[in-house]
Image 1 (cartoon, helix red, strand yellow):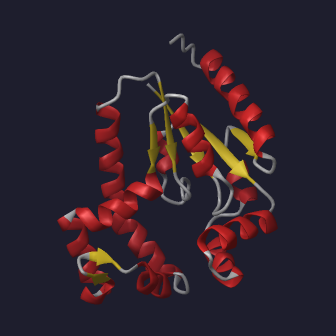
Image 2 (cartoon, helix red, strand yellow):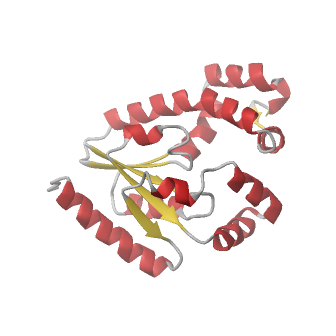
Length: 198
């Protein structure tokens, strides 16, 4: 089984690419989505988060993302702490996901692939890029949030330049039709490189 990591900053379009790959029949693991589910469903994880951030972080047994954002995005040490609590659970969840699939090629998406050292679980890393203003426009339109919030999230993520050095492939995601062609080309390259026949 070959694990291909998809990473990129907020608004780069990695989730859209992951959905495209899913529709093509590839097993795809969305780390960010699963993390959001696990913080609400895993009792042990919930208790650890409450212990560090207080019981008010949960409203009606679901994490209050607005309260959490206010705590972590202006305090890098708190964000680091939160990630250190969540990521072992996401890692275990991904291991269970792998056990359930028999596919030769699996895609794993994570916004903080390198920061969380998730790249060490992957055989090949693809960085999804887009110009900063394009990314800001996508997120403000999608999530209906202020540009300053998007910029503060970006400041807490590694820059594309830092990620490029550690990535095996870079895909510029500006024009979707062009991106699809690049992803199709990537699939061919991966099958050749890793001798995948199915």
